Image (cartoon, rainbow, N blue to C red; front, side, top):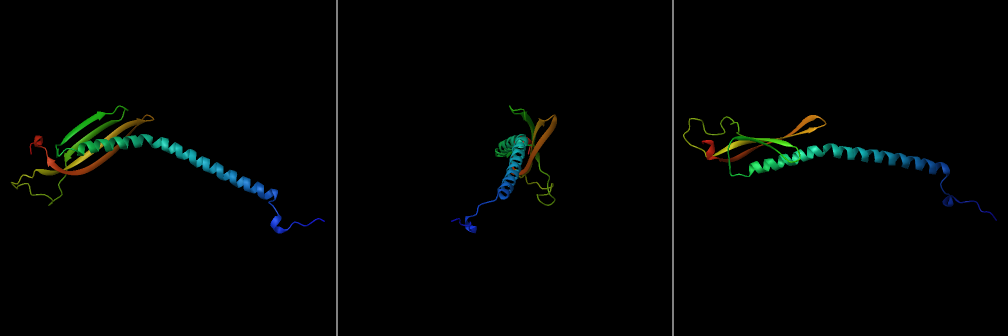
Length: 144
């Protein structure tokens, strides 16, 4: 006695299996392409990440002293990245400080601190800039 297959015992047809394999293959290729592109972007951004780390390091170093003095400095790190740092008296907003004719000598002031990191990538110069304002004591070496 041969029984007819009931609906619950039926399997997948060859066509359904082939379509599923094609869909899975397409998705796999797309995911591998995205992964490859992501790895290339990570490699492309590495010099920018190093420059940012150097700029943050130099900025932190410049913000550490209790008193600041307007100055310009520069240097080179061992990995070839160059830096220039500048501390200036920040521009005064009208009415924010005492008028110039005032005899009061304020031992504190607002300073503009700028750090720029330079490097060369694929024969093209690149740079990264960090800039901030810092309220600090005026260094006596500044003649204030």
